Image (cartoon, rainbow over all chains, first blue to last red):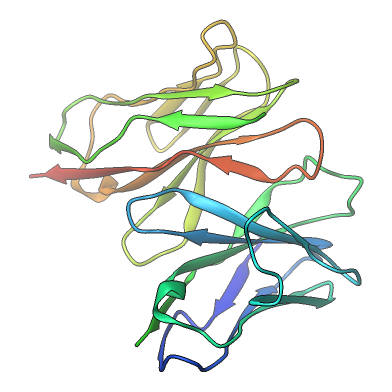
Length: 119
Length: 113
């Protein structure tokens, strides 16, 4: 089946540093990738939708200058948390959807998530 | 708009007990409905889905029926096992727009021997 690899799985870093999270579709082309954030005891919240070759679409309340998303190829999207602070500590999950943007009903495949801890 | 309301946990059951996790939704159009499972330390996995009214999704002994009249998609399993301990998310995908998923808050299930 379709596999999405997310890296790293866990990162601990000091406040003020930037952290990059990668999301790769290993055996399919993903025109669209989604980035979610999961707060403790809360649901997954969509942060942004990225389409290959174009700017990401951010959800209301998500700072695009804080959470930089790059979807440079059909198999790779990156999320960079810039100047991270303790309140950015969370679990971030990406998902990738097969096919073109016209095929909206294609399933989403999820990465295993990245636990980010900012000290 | 689209939203999912899910039964809050945590839920603790003995092995072989019957499981029900309630999920109701609000949506425009004709959404698809999903249950995802997140095992400890892992990412989300699709458990089952239903794409139209009266469809029943099933997998690994879990079932859920798409009830349009009650806007519900309750997850059931007749006999849970310790290995079913996980967090379960109900989700909806709208029929229009970017087709992203809307998730419930998740329900943590712990099955004890």
